[in-house]
Image 1 (spheres, helix red, strand yellow):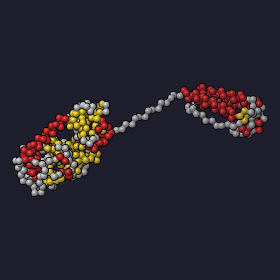
Image 2 (cartoon, one colour; image 1 turned 180 degrees about the horizontal axis):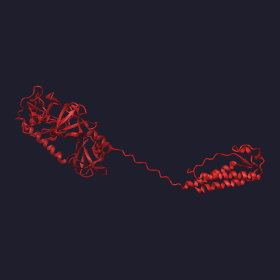
Image 3 (cartoon, one colour; image 1 turned 90 degrees about the vertical axis):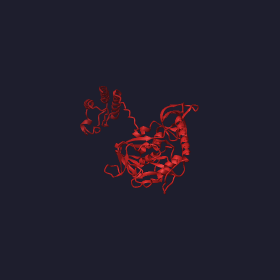
Image 4 (spheres, one colour; image 1 turned 30 degrees about the vertical axis):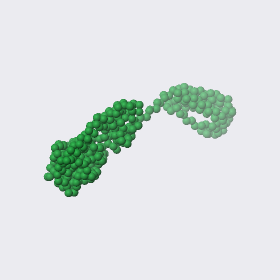
Length: 431
Protein backbone atom coordinates (compact mmCIF):
# COMPACT_ATOMS: atom_id res chain seq x y z
CA UNK A 1 0.00 0.00 0.00
CA UNK A 2 2.87 2.44 0.85
CA UNK A 3 4.50 1.61 -2.48
CA UNK A 4 1.29 2.53 -4.27
CA UNK A 5 1.07 6.03 -2.86
CA UNK A 6 4.82 6.67 -3.13
CA UNK A 7 4.42 6.25 -6.86
CA UNK A 8 1.50 8.67 -6.85
CA UNK A 9 3.50 11.26 -4.92
CA UNK A 10 6.47 10.90 -7.29
CA UNK A 11 4.29 11.57 -10.29
CA UNK A 12 2.72 14.62 -8.66
CA UNK A 13 6.11 16.05 -7.82
CA UNK A 14 7.35 15.48 -11.36
CA UNK A 15 4.35 17.31 -12.69
CA UNK A 16 5.03 20.20 -10.36
CA UNK A 17 8.58 20.57 -11.73
CA UNK A 18 7.30 20.70 -15.28
CA UNK A 19 4.74 23.31 -14.34
CA UNK A 20 7.40 25.66 -12.89
CA UNK A 21 8.59 26.45 -16.43
CA UNK A 22 5.12 27.33 -17.70
CA UNK A 23 3.68 30.68 -18.66
CA UNK A 24 1.53 32.74 -16.26
CA UNK A 25 -1.60 30.97 -14.96
CA UNK A 26 -5.05 32.15 -15.99
CA UNK A 27 -7.23 32.76 -12.98
CA UNK A 28 -10.34 31.59 -14.80
CA UNK A 29 -8.87 28.07 -14.83
CA UNK A 30 -9.38 27.80 -11.02
CA UNK A 31 -13.08 28.12 -10.24
CA UNK A 32 -12.42 27.40 -6.59
CA UNK A 33 -9.99 30.30 -6.31
CA UNK A 34 -12.02 32.82 -8.24
CA UNK A 35 -10.96 35.35 -10.86
CA UNK A 36 -8.27 37.64 -9.45
CA UNK A 37 -6.62 40.37 -11.58
CA UNK A 38 -3.56 40.24 -9.32
CA UNK A 39 -2.98 36.62 -10.11
CA UNK A 40 -2.67 37.35 -13.82
CA UNK A 41 0.36 39.62 -13.08
CA UNK A 42 1.92 37.37 -10.44
CA UNK A 43 5.69 37.06 -10.99
CA UNK A 44 7.16 33.63 -11.90
CA UNK A 45 8.54 33.27 -8.38
CA UNK A 46 5.07 33.75 -6.93
CA UNK A 47 3.66 31.25 -9.47
CA UNK A 48 6.19 28.72 -8.25
CA UNK A 49 4.95 29.42 -4.74
CA UNK A 50 1.39 28.85 -5.87
CA UNK A 51 2.35 25.56 -7.55
CA UNK A 52 4.17 24.48 -4.41
CA UNK A 53 0.94 25.11 -2.53
CA UNK A 54 -0.92 22.93 -5.03
CA UNK A 55 1.72 20.22 -4.69
CA UNK A 56 1.51 20.38 -0.91
CA UNK A 57 -2.28 20.08 -1.08
CA UNK A 58 -2.00 17.05 -3.35
CA UNK A 59 0.58 15.52 -1.03
CA UNK A 60 -1.75 16.08 1.94
CA UNK A 61 -4.61 14.47 0.02
CA UNK A 62 -2.38 11.52 -0.87
CA UNK A 63 -1.38 11.06 2.76
CA UNK A 64 -5.00 11.15 3.84
CA UNK A 65 -5.85 8.60 1.23
CA UNK A 66 -3.62 6.04 2.92
CA UNK A 67 -6.27 5.78 5.65
CA UNK A 68 -8.81 4.61 3.14
CA UNK A 69 -9.07 0.82 2.97
CA UNK A 70 -10.63 0.62 -0.48
CA UNK A 71 -8.40 0.43 -3.53
CA UNK A 72 -10.65 2.63 -5.64
CA UNK A 73 -9.84 6.39 -5.74
CA UNK A 74 -12.33 8.89 -7.15
CA UNK A 75 -10.87 12.24 -8.15
CA UNK A 76 -12.64 15.41 -9.24
CA UNK A 77 -11.39 16.36 -12.72
CA UNK A 78 -9.48 19.67 -12.87
CA UNK A 79 -9.33 21.58 -16.14
CA UNK A 80 -6.65 24.27 -16.34
CA UNK A 81 -3.95 25.38 -18.71
CA UNK A 82 -0.49 26.39 -17.49
CA UNK A 83 1.40 27.64 -20.53
CA UNK A 84 1.88 24.77 -22.95
CA UNK A 85 1.32 22.11 -20.27
CA UNK A 86 -2.33 20.96 -20.02
CA UNK A 87 -3.61 19.67 -16.68
CA UNK A 88 -5.31 16.95 -18.71
CA UNK A 89 -1.83 15.48 -19.09
CA UNK A 90 -1.24 15.92 -15.36
CA UNK A 91 -4.48 14.13 -14.56
CA UNK A 92 -3.60 11.36 -17.00
CA UNK A 93 -0.20 10.83 -15.41
CA UNK A 94 -1.77 10.73 -11.97
CA UNK A 95 -4.43 8.25 -13.11
CA UNK A 96 -1.87 5.95 -14.73
CA UNK A 97 0.21 5.92 -11.58
CA UNK A 98 -2.79 5.12 -9.39
CA UNK A 99 -3.87 2.31 -11.72
CA UNK A 100 -0.35 0.88 -11.74
CA UNK A 101 -0.20 1.07 -7.96
CA UNK A 102 -3.63 -0.53 -7.63
CA UNK A 103 -2.50 -3.30 -9.95
CA UNK A 104 0.48 -3.95 -7.69
CA UNK A 105 -1.74 -4.02 -4.63
CA UNK A 106 -4.28 -6.31 -6.31
CA UNK A 107 -1.54 -8.89 -6.83
CA UNK A 108 -0.79 -8.80 -3.12
CA UNK A 109 -4.46 -9.26 -2.15
CA UNK A 110 -5.46 -12.81 -1.01
CA UNK A 111 -7.21 -14.92 -3.59
CA UNK A 112 -10.80 -15.69 -2.65
CA UNK A 113 -11.66 -19.36 -3.08
CA UNK A 114 -15.19 -19.92 -4.33
CA UNK A 115 -17.09 -22.39 -2.20
CA UNK A 116 -18.30 -25.50 -4.00
CA UNK A 117 -22.12 -25.66 -3.94
CA UNK A 118 -23.52 -28.51 -1.91
CA UNK A 119 -24.73 -31.42 -3.98
CA UNK A 120 -28.49 -31.71 -4.30
CA UNK A 121 -29.70 -34.99 -2.92
CA UNK A 122 -32.95 -36.47 -4.19
CA UNK A 123 -34.63 -37.95 -1.16
CA UNK A 124 -36.76 -41.06 -1.31
CA UNK A 125 -39.52 -41.98 1.05
CA UNK A 126 -39.54 -45.22 3.01
CA UNK A 127 -41.60 -47.06 0.39
CA UNK A 128 -39.25 -46.03 -2.45
CA UNK A 129 -36.26 -47.17 -0.40
CA UNK A 130 -38.00 -50.50 0.09
CA UNK A 131 -38.37 -50.87 -3.69
CA UNK A 132 -34.96 -49.50 -4.74
CA UNK A 133 -33.25 -52.89 -5.04
CA UNK A 134 -36.00 -54.77 -6.88
CA UNK A 135 -35.90 -56.60 -10.20
CA UNK A 136 -39.32 -57.06 -11.85
CA UNK A 137 -40.12 -59.29 -14.81
CA UNK A 138 -41.75 -57.55 -17.75
CA UNK A 139 -42.62 -60.34 -20.19
CA UNK A 140 -45.67 -62.04 -21.72
CA UNK A 141 -45.46 -65.14 -19.53
CA UNK A 142 -42.24 -65.81 -17.63
CA UNK A 143 -38.46 -65.54 -17.84
CA UNK A 144 -36.26 -68.48 -16.91
CA UNK A 145 -34.04 -68.24 -13.86
CA UNK A 146 -30.75 -70.03 -14.60
CA UNK A 147 -27.90 -71.31 -12.47
CA UNK A 148 -25.38 -69.08 -14.27
CA UNK A 149 -25.30 -66.09 -16.63
CA UNK A 150 -25.73 -68.15 -19.78
CA UNK A 151 -28.59 -69.47 -21.90
CA UNK A 152 -26.88 -72.84 -21.69
CA UNK A 153 -27.03 -72.92 -17.88
CA UNK A 154 -29.53 -75.08 -16.00
CA UNK A 155 -33.03 -73.67 -15.40
CA UNK A 156 -33.60 -73.45 -11.66
CA UNK A 157 -36.92 -71.60 -11.67
CA UNK A 158 -39.30 -69.20 -13.37
CA UNK A 159 -39.90 -65.51 -12.76
CA UNK A 160 -43.43 -64.86 -14.04
CA UNK A 161 -44.59 -61.56 -15.51
CA UNK A 162 -44.71 -58.84 -12.85
CA UNK A 163 -43.05 -61.17 -10.37
CA UNK A 164 -40.36 -59.65 -8.21
CA UNK A 165 -36.85 -60.52 -7.11
CA UNK A 166 -34.06 -58.80 -5.21
CA UNK A 167 -31.00 -57.61 -7.15
CA UNK A 168 -27.75 -59.25 -6.04
CA UNK A 169 -25.21 -58.60 -8.82
CA UNK A 170 -24.72 -58.12 -12.57
CA UNK A 171 -22.74 -60.27 -14.98
CA UNK A 172 -22.45 -60.05 -18.77
CA UNK A 173 -25.96 -58.67 -19.34
CA UNK A 174 -27.55 -60.87 -16.68
CA UNK A 175 -28.83 -60.01 -13.20
CA UNK A 176 -28.32 -62.33 -10.29
CA UNK A 177 -31.49 -62.32 -8.19
CA UNK A 178 -33.07 -63.90 -5.15
CA UNK A 179 -36.83 -64.44 -5.25
CA UNK A 180 -38.78 -66.68 -2.94
CA UNK A 181 -36.89 -69.96 -2.71
CA UNK A 182 -35.16 -69.35 -6.02
CA UNK A 183 -31.73 -67.85 -6.63
CA UNK A 184 -30.06 -67.50 -10.01
CA UNK A 185 -29.65 -65.34 -13.13
CA UNK A 186 -32.19 -63.68 -15.42
CA UNK A 187 -31.44 -61.93 -18.69
CA UNK A 188 -31.43 -58.16 -18.12
CA UNK A 189 -33.52 -57.37 -21.21
CA UNK A 190 -36.55 -59.14 -19.72
CA UNK A 191 -36.69 -57.26 -16.43
CA UNK A 192 -36.74 -53.68 -15.14
CA UNK A 193 -34.67 -52.16 -12.34
CA UNK A 194 -33.98 -48.78 -10.71
CA UNK A 195 -36.59 -46.03 -11.05
CA UNK A 196 -38.59 -48.12 -13.53
CA UNK A 197 -38.81 -50.92 -10.99
CA UNK A 198 -39.84 -48.48 -8.24
CA UNK A 199 -42.70 -47.20 -10.40
CA UNK A 200 -43.81 -50.68 -11.46
CA UNK A 201 -43.58 -52.04 -7.92
CA UNK A 202 -46.23 -49.56 -6.82
CA UNK A 203 -48.55 -51.02 -9.45
CA UNK A 204 -47.92 -54.74 -8.96
CA UNK A 205 -47.27 -54.84 -5.21
CA UNK A 206 -50.08 -55.16 -2.69
CA UNK A 207 -49.82 -53.06 0.45
CA UNK A 208 -51.06 -55.20 3.31
CA UNK A 209 -52.01 -54.17 6.84
CA UNK A 210 -51.85 -57.08 9.29
CA UNK A 211 -53.93 -56.55 12.43
CA UNK A 212 -51.90 -56.67 15.65
CA UNK A 213 -54.67 -56.08 18.19
CA UNK A 214 -57.46 -58.41 19.35
CA UNK A 215 -60.21 -56.47 17.58
CA UNK A 216 -59.53 -53.62 15.21
CA UNK A 217 -62.22 -51.02 14.58
CA UNK A 218 -62.57 -49.79 11.02
CA UNK A 219 -63.99 -46.28 11.04
CA UNK A 220 -65.85 -44.17 8.53
CA UNK A 221 -63.39 -41.29 8.87
CA UNK A 222 -59.76 -41.07 10.14
CA UNK A 223 -60.72 -40.22 13.70
CA UNK A 224 -61.45 -42.11 16.91
CA UNK A 225 -64.61 -40.02 17.15
CA UNK A 226 -65.88 -41.40 13.82
CA UNK A 227 -68.45 -44.20 13.64
CA UNK A 228 -67.32 -47.83 13.33
CA UNK A 229 -68.31 -49.55 10.08
CA UNK A 230 -66.72 -52.92 10.83
CA UNK A 231 -64.42 -54.94 13.06
CA UNK A 232 -61.44 -57.11 12.14
CA UNK A 233 -59.80 -59.78 14.34
CA UNK A 234 -56.13 -60.11 15.13
CA UNK A 235 -53.82 -61.43 12.37
CA UNK A 236 -56.32 -60.67 9.63
CA UNK A 237 -54.77 -59.06 6.58
CA UNK A 238 -56.34 -56.01 4.97
CA UNK A 239 -55.59 -54.46 1.61
CA UNK A 240 -54.44 -50.85 1.96
CA UNK A 241 -56.24 -48.65 -0.56
CA UNK A 242 -54.69 -45.33 0.45
CA UNK A 243 -51.83 -44.09 2.59
CA UNK A 244 -50.92 -40.63 3.80
CA UNK A 245 -54.52 -39.41 3.94
CA UNK A 246 -54.09 -38.40 7.55
CA UNK A 247 -51.17 -38.83 9.93
CA UNK A 248 -51.46 -42.09 11.81
CA UNK A 249 -54.28 -43.47 9.64
CA UNK A 250 -54.62 -45.57 6.49
CA UNK A 251 -57.59 -46.49 4.34
CA UNK A 252 -58.35 -50.21 4.02
CA UNK A 253 -60.87 -52.44 2.31
CA UNK A 254 -63.21 -54.69 4.30
CA UNK A 255 -66.47 -56.46 3.49
CA UNK A 256 -68.55 -53.53 4.76
CA UNK A 257 -66.69 -51.12 2.51
CA UNK A 258 -63.60 -48.94 2.68
CA UNK A 259 -62.73 -47.37 5.99
CA UNK A 260 -59.90 -46.08 8.14
CA UNK A 261 -57.74 -47.81 10.74
CA UNK A 262 -55.02 -46.49 13.01
CA UNK A 263 -51.50 -47.47 11.99
CA UNK A 264 -50.78 -48.05 15.68
CA UNK A 265 -52.60 -51.39 15.49
CA UNK A 266 -51.34 -52.81 12.19
CA UNK A 267 -48.08 -53.85 10.56
CA UNK A 268 -47.59 -52.60 7.00
CA UNK A 269 -45.87 -54.74 4.38
CA UNK A 270 -45.80 -55.07 0.59
CA UNK A 271 -46.61 -58.38 -1.03
CA UNK A 272 -45.19 -59.37 -4.40
CA UNK A 273 -45.48 -62.48 -6.50
CA UNK A 274 -42.12 -64.26 -6.27
CA UNK A 275 -40.31 -66.67 -8.55
CA UNK A 276 -41.27 -70.34 -8.50
CA UNK A 277 -38.35 -72.71 -8.12
CA UNK A 278 -38.14 -75.86 -10.22
CA UNK A 279 -38.85 -78.01 -7.15
CA UNK A 280 -41.88 -75.88 -6.23
CA UNK A 281 -43.29 -76.13 -9.73
CA UNK A 282 -42.92 -79.90 -9.72
CA UNK A 283 -44.60 -80.13 -6.32
CA UNK A 284 -47.46 -77.90 -7.44
CA UNK A 285 -48.12 -79.92 -10.60
CA UNK A 286 -48.06 -83.16 -8.61
CA UNK A 287 -50.51 -81.75 -6.05
CA UNK A 288 -52.88 -80.62 -8.79
CA UNK A 289 -52.81 -84.05 -10.40
CA UNK A 290 -53.42 -85.75 -7.06
CA UNK A 291 -56.33 -83.41 -6.37
CA UNK A 292 -57.92 -84.24 -9.73
CA UNK A 293 -57.57 -87.96 -9.10
CA UNK A 294 -59.03 -87.60 -5.61
CA UNK A 295 -61.92 -85.56 -6.94
CA UNK A 296 -62.69 -88.09 -9.64
CA UNK A 297 -62.57 -90.94 -7.12
CA UNK A 298 -64.90 -89.11 -4.75
CA UNK A 299 -67.36 -88.18 -7.47
CA UNK A 300 -68.98 -91.62 -7.44
CA UNK A 301 -69.82 -91.48 -3.74
CA UNK A 302 -70.28 -87.77 -3.25
CA UNK A 303 -73.13 -86.91 -0.89
CA UNK A 304 -73.43 -83.22 -1.37
CA UNK A 305 -76.41 -82.57 0.87
CA UNK A 306 -79.23 -80.08 0.45
CA UNK A 307 -78.59 -77.15 -1.84
CA UNK A 308 -79.96 -73.64 -1.87
CA UNK A 309 -82.98 -72.81 -4.00
CA UNK A 310 -81.32 -69.58 -5.16
CA UNK A 311 -78.03 -71.05 -6.35
CA UNK A 312 -76.42 -74.33 -7.28
CA UNK A 313 -72.97 -75.73 -7.91
CA UNK A 314 -71.79 -75.60 -11.50
CA UNK A 315 -68.69 -77.22 -12.92
CA UNK A 316 -66.09 -79.22 -11.06
CA UNK A 317 -66.62 -82.57 -9.46
CA UNK A 318 -65.80 -84.69 -6.43
CA UNK A 319 -65.03 -83.33 -2.98
CA UNK A 320 -64.74 -79.71 -4.09
CA UNK A 321 -68.27 -79.73 -5.48
CA UNK A 322 -69.45 -81.45 -2.32
CA UNK A 323 -67.94 -78.67 -0.22
CA UNK A 324 -69.68 -76.02 -2.31
CA UNK A 325 -73.04 -77.79 -2.20
CA UNK A 326 -72.83 -78.24 1.57
CA UNK A 327 -72.01 -74.56 2.10
CA UNK A 328 -74.99 -73.37 0.06
CA UNK A 329 -77.56 -74.85 2.43
CA UNK A 330 -76.67 -72.20 5.04
CA UNK A 331 -77.51 -69.21 2.84
CA UNK A 332 -79.73 -66.78 4.77
CA UNK A 333 -78.31 -67.60 8.20
CA UNK A 334 -76.90 -64.73 10.30
CA UNK A 335 -73.48 -63.18 10.36
CA UNK A 336 -71.93 -62.82 13.82
CA UNK A 337 -68.50 -61.30 14.32
CA UNK A 338 -66.17 -63.89 15.84
CA UNK A 339 -68.76 -66.64 15.44
CA UNK A 340 -68.40 -70.07 13.84
CA UNK A 341 -71.89 -71.54 14.03
CA UNK A 342 -73.34 -72.26 10.60
CA UNK A 343 -76.86 -71.95 11.97
CA UNK A 344 -76.71 -69.43 14.83
CA UNK A 345 -74.16 -67.08 13.34
CA UNK A 346 -70.63 -66.96 12.00
CA UNK A 347 -68.16 -64.58 10.44
CA UNK A 348 -66.50 -65.16 7.06
CA UNK A 349 -63.51 -67.22 8.19
CA UNK A 350 -65.63 -69.09 10.74
CA UNK A 351 -67.99 -70.04 7.91
CA UNK A 352 -65.21 -71.47 5.73
CA UNK A 353 -63.61 -73.17 8.72
CA UNK A 354 -66.86 -74.86 9.79
CA UNK A 355 -67.79 -75.96 6.26
CA UNK A 356 -64.41 -77.62 5.77
CA UNK A 357 -64.54 -79.14 9.26
CA UNK A 358 -67.54 -81.14 8.03
CA UNK A 359 -65.16 -82.82 5.57
CA UNK A 360 -62.48 -83.48 8.13
CA UNK A 361 -60.22 -80.55 7.27
CA UNK A 362 -59.00 -78.25 10.03
CA UNK A 363 -58.54 -74.61 9.04
CA UNK A 364 -57.62 -71.57 11.18
CA UNK A 365 -60.29 -69.06 12.20
CA UNK A 366 -58.64 -66.19 10.32
CA UNK A 367 -59.07 -64.96 6.76
CA UNK A 368 -55.41 -63.98 6.61
CA UNK A 369 -54.27 -67.38 7.81
CA UNK A 370 -56.61 -69.20 5.41
CA UNK A 371 -54.92 -67.38 2.56
CA UNK A 372 -51.89 -69.52 3.32
CA UNK A 373 -53.73 -72.85 3.35
CA UNK A 374 -53.72 -75.34 0.48
CA UNK A 375 -52.09 -74.03 -2.68
CA UNK A 376 -52.65 -71.13 -5.02
CA UNK A 377 -54.37 -71.99 -8.32
CA UNK A 378 -53.28 -68.84 -10.15
CA UNK A 379 -56.32 -66.60 -10.02
CA UNK A 380 -60.09 -66.63 -10.33
CA UNK A 381 -59.92 -67.89 -13.89
CA UNK A 382 -58.64 -71.24 -12.60
CA UNK A 383 -61.06 -71.54 -9.68
CA UNK A 384 -63.12 -74.68 -9.14
CA UNK A 385 -66.04 -75.33 -6.77
CA UNK A 386 -64.83 -75.69 -3.19
CA UNK A 387 -61.83 -73.38 -3.63
CA UNK A 388 -61.34 -70.64 -1.04
CA UNK A 389 -61.49 -67.18 -2.59
CA UNK A 390 -59.50 -64.65 -0.56
CA UNK A 391 -60.08 -60.90 -0.38
CA UNK A 392 -58.83 -58.10 1.84
CA UNK A 393 -59.99 -59.21 5.30
CA UNK A 394 -62.51 -61.62 3.87
CA UNK A 395 -62.95 -65.14 2.42
CA UNK A 396 -65.64 -67.12 0.65
CA UNK A 397 -66.16 -70.50 -1.03
CA UNK A 398 -66.27 -70.70 -4.80
CA UNK A 399 -69.38 -72.48 -6.13
CA UNK A 400 -68.70 -72.19 -9.87
CA UNK A 401 -70.18 -69.94 -12.53
CA UNK A 402 -68.19 -66.97 -11.24
CA UNK A 403 -69.95 -66.99 -7.85
CA UNK A 404 -69.10 -67.51 -4.18
CA UNK A 405 -71.05 -68.26 -1.01
CA UNK A 406 -69.87 -66.35 2.05
CA UNK A 407 -70.80 -64.89 5.41
CA UNK A 408 -70.84 -61.29 4.31
CA UNK A 409 -71.94 -58.72 6.90
CA UNK A 410 -74.32 -58.39 9.84
CA UNK A 411 -76.78 -56.72 7.51
CA UNK A 412 -76.82 -59.46 4.87
CA UNK A 413 -75.73 -62.65 6.65
CA UNK A 414 -74.62 -65.66 4.57
CA UNK A 415 -75.29 -65.03 0.91
CA UNK A 416 -74.21 -65.68 -2.70
CA UNK A 417 -72.25 -62.99 -4.58
CA UNK A 418 -70.32 -62.58 -7.79
CA UNK A 419 -66.74 -63.69 -7.08
CA UNK A 420 -65.30 -60.59 -8.75
CA UNK A 421 -67.27 -58.08 -6.71
CA UNK A 422 -64.02 -57.13 -4.99
CA UNK A 423 -60.34 -57.48 -5.79
CA UNK A 424 -59.33 -61.12 -5.40
CA UNK A 425 -56.02 -61.58 -3.61
CA UNK A 426 -55.73 -65.34 -3.99
CA UNK A 427 -57.64 -68.52 -4.74
CA UNK A 428 -56.61 -71.49 -2.61
CA UNK A 429 -57.39 -75.13 -3.27
CA UNK A 430 -57.65 -77.61 -0.40
CA UNK A 431 -58.84 -80.72 -2.32
